[in-house]
Length: 279
Image (tube, rainbow, N blue to C red; front, side, top):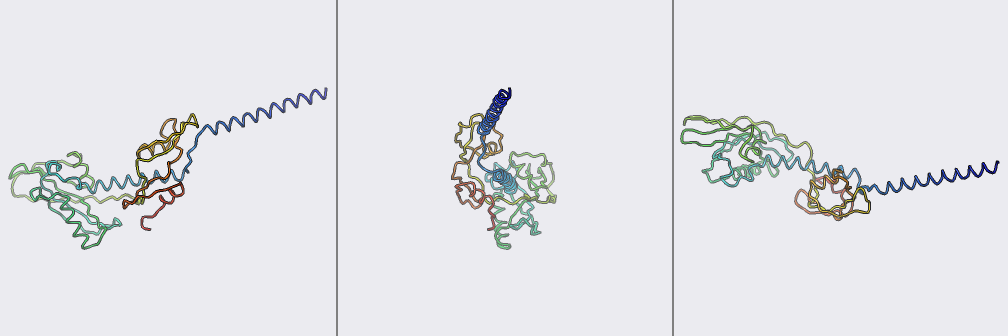
C-alpha cells in the first residue's frame, strides 16, 4: 500500500514537472513570437522629439519667410502696393528694439523679396551676421482707380503666409477707401512668438530604409523604404500588425548647414541627436 502511494505520488510529480516545463516552453515560444524593436525607447523618444521640434521650426520659418516665394506679379493676389512694418532680431531671437516701415510698389519692378533683401543687407552691415528681419504688420493696397483703393490691415506676422498662400485669410478684410487725399497708417503688429525649443542640429535624411516584421510571424521580416510620416508611424507602432525592428545601417543624417553624415549603429545615432549646434 505504501509502495503504491509512492508510485502514485511519483507519477503526479512527473506530470506536474512535465506540465510546468511545457508551460515554460510555451511562454518562451510566445515571447519569441512577439518581435521587439532593436532600438531603445530613449532613442525613439529623441527621434520623435527631434521631428516635432524641426516641424515647429519649419512652420515658423515658412511663416516669417512668406515673401521668398512671391517672385511673380500674379502671385501677389491683386495687391500692388504695401506698407510693411518690420522688426529686427539677433541670432538668439532677441529683439533689437528697432521697428521701421518699408514701402513696396509693383511699379518699382522690385519684388517684396528684393525689398527684404535690401533691408537685411543694411541690418547686417550695422549689427553683423545673424540678424533677422520679420515683417510684423502691413497695409495691403489694391488700387481700383486713381481715387479709390481697397485696403487691408495685417497685424500678425503669421497672417502674411496665411493670406498669400491662397489669397484669403479670416484675418484679412479689404475695405474700399475713396478720395485722393488720405493718409495710410500701418497698424501695430503683435509680438513675434519664436518656437520655444531649440532647432535640432541634425535630422534623418529621407527616404529611409528600415526593417519591419509581421507581428504574427517572427520569421516574416522585410526591408522597406519610407518617408518621414510613414517612418514615424512605424516607429510609434501605428501600423497594424507590423513591428518596427531596426534601421538599415548606415543611416544618412543631414546637419543644419547641409552637411551629410552617416551613423553606423544605434550608439552613433544617439551621439548625433545629442549634438549641440554650437559645439
